[in-house]
View 1 (tube, helix red, strand yellow):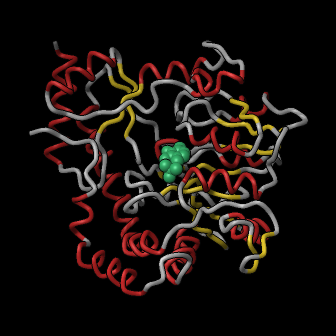
View 2: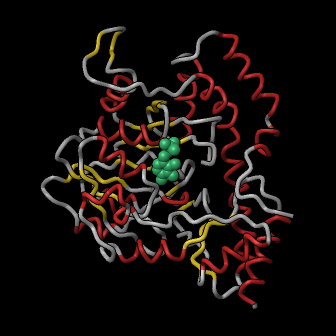
Length: 364
Ligand SMILES: *Cc1c(COP(=O)(O)O)cnc(C)c1O
């Protein structure tokens, strides 16, 4: 049987009645923008993340962009971030007119290495933008010691913890995405920013709604970037189940660890003792990746490479003037990473099938 990489319909069918009820209530209400569902979801998401405020926006990318702007990042500033992430992380910095300054990763966790971050500070450094990649929290305690504002990219990490504290509650702001494949997904695009800072909270509410504090009075140039009522209503159905979804992801990870323990060519993901990994991705380091990928494909097993090219090597960032070799650990990771299916509703038999196919490849 083929094994798919991600199938959201399994999750949706378990809460089918609640979802249809929520969707039709919004449809019948006639209120689609900034209504009671967005307001209620913001409260519920803030409570989940352990922050005072949360602000719904149109996507995770917008969450990053607006959070950077609300934190005062603007033209001529520098923001230190990882080259080993989804492009949106660095795009958001560029949208503010600022420069993404990359720092290499810790090869064990794939996250920003605080020692590398420190080397990149200049007079222009305005913020640090760490990414909790694959759902594992960064060393926020170390990064916090630099005394520079931190905007967290939590797009893959809703529910991740460091020392019992939630991702998105450490920095000046935490940025979440509800793209369907994330830990908490909606039926399209959606995003959220968490913060404990009242000023940032107020600024975000103005920025997301055309710079408006009262109707048709515009204090600054803002954006049309609101989470809509329909998505908020769907997210309110799913949020109470998030911890269960994460437990299922962690169970799947534990089974992978058991079944792959004896495959010497495969390095399993590292979960430091003080952290709760949410396994938005279960990412291996493997030998002969392209051969393994072809073999898995021939067996009908889906796998993905997140990410095949570091941001400093992308054409889009050519103006930054980087060259191959500038971030060797990120480049080494891009050549060896392989993500396996890990979504909550993946079945035990499917995980066994994936592992059997991997073991078979290296036995040959
Ligand atoms: C998904 C993702 C984003 C962007 O979120 P969208 O909702 O797709 O805009 C940003 N950063 C990371 C690390 C992501 O995985």
